[in-house]
Amino acid sequence: MEFAWTAEQTAFREAVIEFARRSLRDDVIGRDRDGAFARELWRRCGEFGIQGLPFPEEYGGGGRDALSAVQALEALGYACRDNGLLFAIAAQMWSVQMPIHRFGTDDQKRRFLSRLCTGEWIGAHGMSEPDSGSDAFSLRTRAERRGEDYVLNGTKTFVSEAPVADVFVVFATLDPRKGPLGITGFIVERDTPGFHVGRPIHKMGLRTSPMAELVLEDCRVPAANRLGREGRGAQVFNDSMEWERGCILANALGAMERQLEDSVSYARERRQFGVPISQFQAIQHRLVDMKVRLEAARLLLYRAVWAKQSDRDPGTAAAIAKLVVSEAWVQSGLNAVQIRGGYGYAVEYEAERDLRDAVGSTLFSGTSDMQRNLIARSLRL
Amino acid sequence: MTEPTSMPAVKQFILDHFLAGEDPARLTPTTPLITGGIVDSLGLLDLVMFLEQQFHVEFEAHEVDPAHFDTLAAIDAILQRKRAQ
Image (cartoon, rainbow over all chains, first blue to last red; front, top):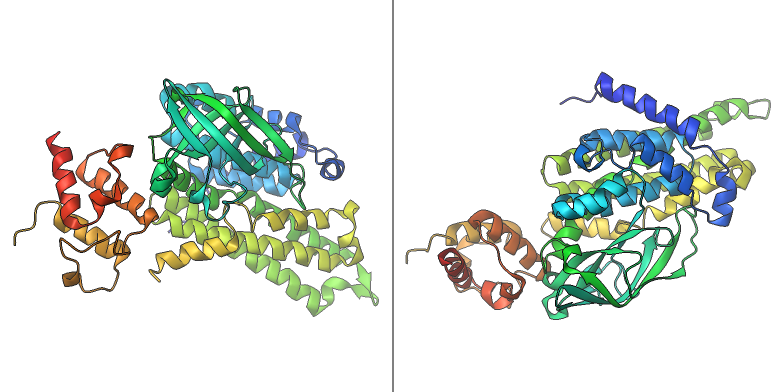
């Protein structure tokens, strides 16, 4: 068992940190307040090669292995304070690009994956519906084959990046009686007739990653845009969810490391009762808990990515990682606020935003309770 | 009774994934898997994917009918039909 990165991987991590500090700094406090997405920063990430990291070079990707990609995303989380931007990038990579890469045709990869890898386009993923969230396969959006097209009707909700995305991976059923085996995936371009972005959804955190509903009204999607086989959308969805659960919180590891370093610095400088507060055992224990959670979360996430990459019980490993990393991020954010007292609660010091952003991680890609259900299933309970 | 060729592998898959800890002798060629509540709709997806990978066949959407996969005998029958095509 080897726990060290290679010299090349370490050098790339440093390059990502330098890129983020140089090119991704802007008024994130203001954009968080306004709920504004930073398309220019997205474009810069694409130019650097972030969105394409684990995808083939022939489609504009970087050709790196998934662990190296995750390491780079972790570095971004450390050096870039816009958690919403990084969430948007990761969501696209694992729930839009990855299913196109693994289940798409060569034509689909040329038309869509290449533009997503370079940052030219933004991709979004539509699965949840008003009446199907955790019970994802009870979706009601219908697909009907008519000649060379499929006609889609239904509504999707909680679609991250819907207001700004150019292309969408959506799931619909050809026959609700077949349950998961009736579901089929489709790639829908924004300008497709019958496709509309619905009302925006305002959120507690990750506000720089805009969210909205999608409305499909007699939306005619060419059969060439079907993603995977008819009736195998659940397979496509499950596979991409394993990638997403395992990888989407890589930036949270970097964010937790940044929170820890900032909190240690603050505790050393902040004096109360005549001494730095770092000398108080209560503060020390909070900092130690942050460190221990980070280290455990990091190992579980790396192991989940390794398991998916090498096809060794990827589902359970991803669920465990998602559960532990997301809960650790919330606790880390709460500790960072508590250590700073009133300053932690003030917007200008940025600790409260990290905490708000972290809460979403216990909900998206399956709630913490759904991760526990997946782990319970692996125990044959 | 001599089991047809697909049965041992499919039986082992069912035992491993849906009947862990159960007595293998209780899973017979006519045990109802889906209508008997052993394999749910998500499990059927896993079963179909296993069959396609293990036996190098592809089931079209219209062929994935629970009736075709409800017993080891039914599974063997549809596999034999697919392989004969």
